[in-house]
Image 1: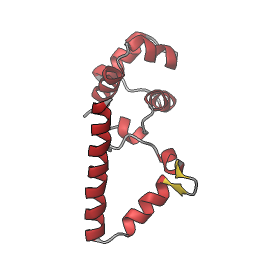
Image 2: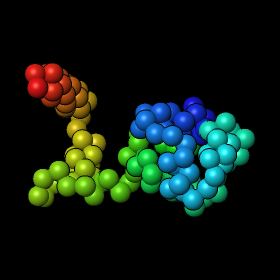
Image 3: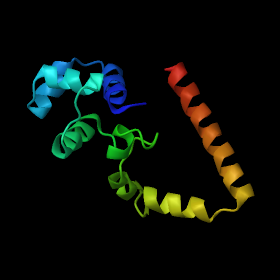
Length: 120
């Protein structure tokens, strides 16, 4: 996807109008419309503002990755002594069988979590 399509999709996903993003960035609604239509591209500071507004990485905004979270999320604590970065590093040390087992376990946890949401 192109940058304009991405920010348009993010806005639709969040259920907001162009005005809300425009107000946050202190630009006109027309400017946001031009970004979404691919007529103009934002400067670097505005691009960072858009990433902050939608809580996504610049790489995601630019269509370079499907991973929304930025590098700052690597420091997020999962437990008292374990961060997302620790989890990633540990995962990268697993052999193929270990990686396969981990993916199966994660999928199982997600199913369990989804069932819990359905029962509420």
